[in-house]
Image 1 (spheres, helix red, strand yellow):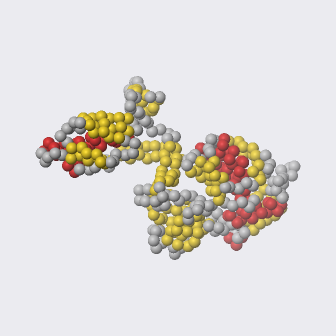
Image 2: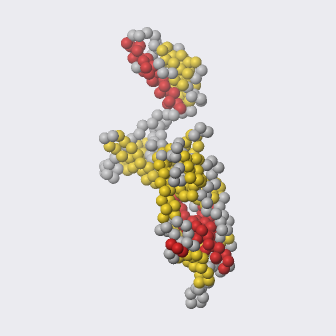
Image 3: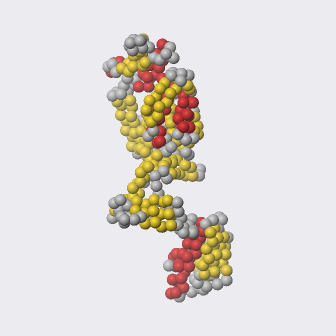
Length: 399
C-alpha cells in the first residue's frame, strides 16, 4: 500500500481542506462537506493545492495505514467535487426500469412494481430515449464539440469478455426525416423563408443560413417527409442556378451552407497521413438528355418545348423537366442544363482511409495528394472510428 500512500493528492479549485488537531479532516466543495477522523499517528501535510501523507515508521501497521489514509482522504476530495456513483444493470425478459419523479420504478417479474425513493443527498438517474450525447475533441486549441445527438436506441451487452453499451444517437434533424407534413408555398416564396419555416415549426433553432434564396413557383407538398421537402427546395434552387449546399446541425442549431465552405482545409497525403485510397468511376446514374415539357392543355397534355443534350454517346438516358407557369422557356432550359451539369458526368466515387480528424464533416473540402487522387475534394460522407483513431471518407472532386 506504500506505493499508493506516496501519491500526492491535488486539491481542485473550489475545494478547501482543513486538517485539525488529531487528524480530523474537513473537506468542503461544490457538492457539500465531509468530515472524518483519520488515524492520528499518520502525518498529513498540505502545501498549496497538494496534500501528502507520510507514515511515522516502517512498522507493519503504519505501512498498512499509509495507503489507506491516502485513499480515504482522496475519496473525500472526489466526493465533494464529482460525487459518487454506482451503476446497476437490470437484465431480464420484460424487465423495465423508469424514473418517475423522485421514485425509481422497477418491473422485475413480480406481480407488483418495486419502487425505491430517493433519499436526501442521493439522486437516481435512468438512461432513457432522448438523452443527449455530446462528443468533444481537443486538437491543441482546447476542447470543441464535434458531434451531438439524442439517444434513440440503446442496448447493454454482457459477455465473458466484459460489458459494453451500444447507443444510436441522432441530431436535431432526425425528427425531420421521421415526420411528414402538407406544406403549401404560394408563388414567389423564397427558399430561405420556406426552409427556416420548417425548422421553426419543429422547434429547431437556426444557427447559420448561407443557402440560396431563389423564388419558387406555387408548390404543394402532400404527406411528404420534411427532410425531402427541404431537399426538393434546394434542388429546385440549384436548377435555377444556385450552388450546391449541405444541411446539418452543430451545437444544437441547424445550418445550411455551400459545399466546401469550411475555413480549415485539411491536407491528406499518401506519403504522410493516408493509409488507403480507392477510386471508382461509374456511368450507371448518368443523365444524357433532359426534355422540357410545356404547360398542360385542358386535356392534361403537354408538348415538348426543348431538348438539352449531354453525353449522348453513352446512350439516351432521359429526364423530364416540367415548365411551370412561372417559368419562361429560357428559365426552363437553364434548369434543364443545370440537371445535365449536375448529373450528366460519369460518377466518380473515391474512398480515403486516414488518421481521424474529428472536426471533419460531410460537405467539407479537403486536399488529397496520392497516386490516384490529387487535388481538392468534397467529403460525401465520413465515418469516424474512435477505437482505431481512423476515419473513412467518401469524396468527390470539388467543382
